Length: 291
Image 1 (tube, rainbow, N blue to C red):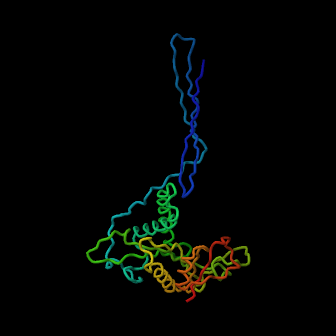
Image 2 (image 1 turned 30 degrees about the horizontal axis):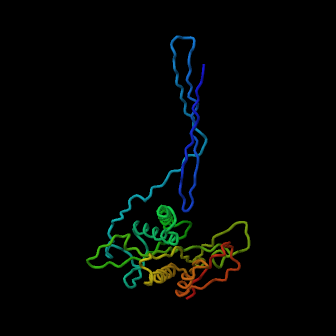
């Protein structure tokens, strides 16, 4: 009796995660395919035996769809009368308000992807990275806006005002975005990230006077910059925080981003002396609104 064996094969899976490409090998276990010859009989009988074994390797992760379901990218900007929203700030040709439509959340996520990859347009696969970033950010925005542990988060957008006889899609009307979070100080904190005396248990002080506002993810479309959009979105966010009973509003800015520092200082933010900060990122400044 003679045996012929077919060796197992390997599958190569390539996944993309921002600027990294990960390669994972998955082994497909195929037991030998045996061909048995019975020499005692004048007739040669061939028996094929094939069995499938389940390996202990972890399952292959599912790949998310490139775009969330239910979005209508051709959806027209609804008229002002359809929005039941009192809190808004009108300035020039624009309006700052909370995002309401999924298409607005998606456009906010895409603007953040554009901003994140703004200086790396020449990198390979940059468009794929932007789409993946936007998809992840869209899902993150929706989760944050649902609120968790008593915290509140709002996605604020700047949109073009409706004009007579001009129809725009929602994704073309959104020109700026930022997040406003209402958070609680940890016990002993006087500013976010302050180093406090180590305790066995860390408590969140949920008294109204121990809340603060935090602004993040501020960005404006390239085509709409230098029109006061960022300043007015900040003004609207600060006023929204105050209407929620919050007086202290903070934001982080990169140490080398001089343009952003000038913007925040012009709006009324000042750098906080954070010598007692637990943050290990020395590239960021913490700013507080002081007006």
